Amino acid sequence: MKTMRLRIGTRGSALALAQAHETRVRLMAAHGLPEDAFDIVVIQTSGDRILDRPLSEAGGKGLFTKEIEEALLDGRIDIAVHSSKDMPTALPDGLALVCFLEREDVRDAFIGRAAARFADLPRGAVVGSSSLRRQALIRRARPDIDIVMFRGNVQTRLRKLDEGQVAGTFLALAGLKRLGLANLATETLEIDDFPPAPGQGAICIEARADDSATRGLLAPINHRATEIALTCERAFLAGLDGSCRTPIAGHAIVLGDRVDFSGMILTPDGREAHDTVLDGAADDAALLGRAAADKLRAMAGARFFDSW
Image (tube, rainbow, N blue to C red; front, side, top):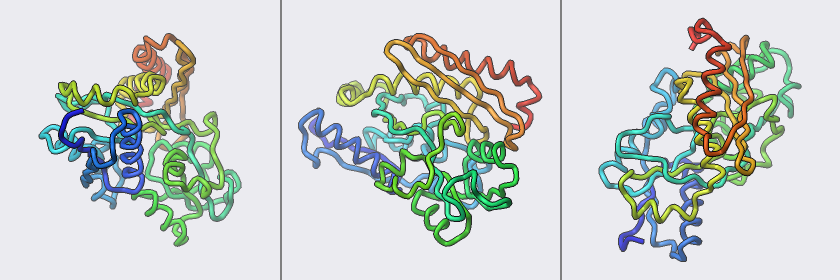
């Protein structure tokens, strides 16, 4: 380890800090280091500041990473800890995703007030969500539901829910678990009915591509199966030009030296959807993800993407 303290860059939300703390704890255990060998550096991002409109209108996923990546490039921090599903598929020159922590539960959780289960909501109920994937899946299952934009961190969304602004909302179960709030979920959605976003439930760590010392420090905490799964899912996303502007679901499961992948694309209104299931060798995870994207593009046809 370098004699200097390792500076861990993160957003300032409770969930982002929990993920940064988890990274620090794993590094402490892997290297027998004390807590004060690490500094957690909070960086506010554009995504944290812009809360009055959907990410699809404000600039997409990069709003949650831009300022953190700038700090990484100019040497103010040594690593950046992110939610994998927030990461654009194209990274700035000189940066790389070098480590993935073991993945948490990938499923979505429903937190209902008017009903405990999503399917039991009364007709015309108002549900809050800022995710285009979730919005499309909601509309696909319940076209009678009224959806309103629900930006903000987990605590902000829960406060809006408690204030009665909506009858229910959806959050990633992994985030609730990391915050010790899993008991708030009134229903856990099954993957077949509510497929997750690519990268959901996984923490990734970004570093300067040429920083071999830091990469070596991170190597012992990298979870290989999660890395393979995310390689597949991110290749799928890249093949579809995926961003916060597009309703895309994708999930890879690593079984030994094989990968099972399922992917779905939807129109924003949820009226049309196409899905595929493919499997292949773990060593070919990126090729598998790209093949799934190409297959869905062919199935859907060019007209489908006009709505994106």
